Image (cartoon, rainbow, N blue to C red; front, side, top):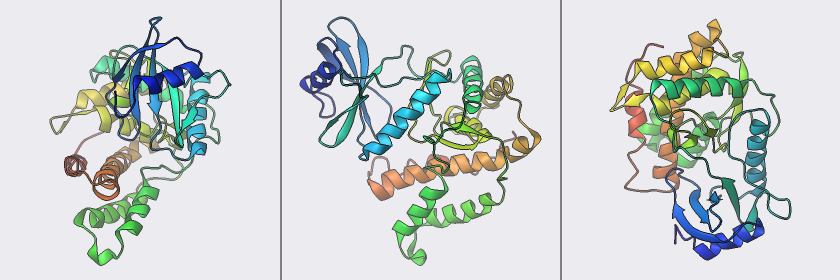
Length: 304
């Protein structure tokens, strides 16, 4: 049994995909909204069972899957849900989508310079693929989330300190990020649990936060995700990401100038999402202070 998923449940989906019987099911690390479980089949096949708890709107599931198909068709490694025998890429159970994805060997990407150069290069290639409507132009963890949080918090005079600071800093940042920066298809959440491969990228997964926006935003978000250790930013990580990225797509002068503001926006977005998730939306005393990691980082200067 894994997070309410029994081996019988997994066999239901494997049968719909025309696969062999499921021998075992093992919960996997990573992901805060959806559950992921490793299925080992009797014929030796390995698949990841993903249950989309956070996407109750099946139109949203279709959009995310279509993003991954588009990315893969344009040469960016990912793990797309396999087609079931009826041609669909998910089945619905109790109103929730269930998918099976090919298992990618290698674990999560490491943060050593060679691995991060690989991530920078892969990211730059992704930013150059054609823009399509499957990707929104608003960042789900950015400005629109901030506004939702303000509305949910009610009377501004009664807001907690974090929301007061969030609004102040967000208003300052809006004027510091140019609107004409080069755009591309962005992942939006390039943290270690969303990049597989160990020593080099073999797959970028989980495109729920993907959007069309300023390319350099993804670059600094990857630094937020991979570039810190024990509360300290690692210059060698930034250098590796940048070297890999610019081997494909050199930054423009306007992008270089915007890096500090984009970095603050990325960090603030992660802080806001964690606060929204663990304090406001689904209060969890064990995780309620997780946002403070990002708040603390905002007070640390870094030269890009």
